[in-house]
Image 1 (cartoon, rainbow over the protein chains, first blue to last red):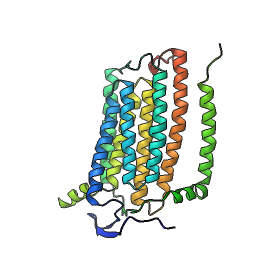
Image 2: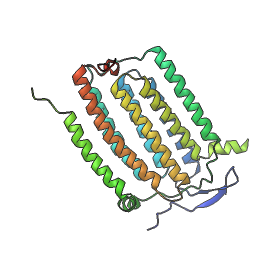
Image 3: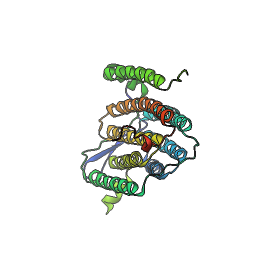
Image 4: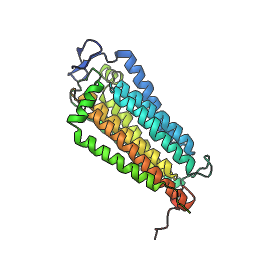
Length: 192
Length: 111
């Protein structure tokens, strides 16, 4: 079954002389506004994780970062990945991290600060890395970016997981079982 | 001038790559400067999310209709959840043994 497009596709020339296939999975202004809102929220949340001094505030900023990344996935016409991100990451991993925070702290508001020298060195390295990455990203010609204009239906992902990606799928299942056993063993209560 | 305006306004591949780069650097900074072990885990989650955003963006803009990037992102989410579970269990053991979650105190093996 062909994936359903949400409208008509049309080709328009882009700045590099190629053609962008724009199908209105999302049309024009909405996509632009939502992208910049979500990207700004993601960046602010990520920076908030960096600069927070208390672990619980870092967890809250991580929550917003993960939710905004799920929004970016929706913009990228990856509905299933976005839903899984919200269910597994926000609803699973984040809750697990909060459990970890609450179980491993004498008080949730305790703070350990890194030394100033470490902060400055790490900050310089990370800002330098960011600048280098952005320069490279903006300077590379990524080729003709023809947009896939329609949402991949979940049925296709399911079929692909069972045919083309069968081995990684089964390996992930085995891994999850191993992790479950290992984590349960590691976190067991010792009998005194 | 109009070309640059168009390439900034029309959302393209590089927009998502820049967001992912910011997420990556934020995650690396968090991993290197936090002394709370759970804080380091939060940094790892940010880095993994940046990789997923990259994959899904490339899948949408350069994928040619295939969904390889999305399925790889699904596997990344699965692996990140598994690794977070194990890492939290390890952190709980750390706390049980050393009565603190400060990783700078874990220097029993230090020379």
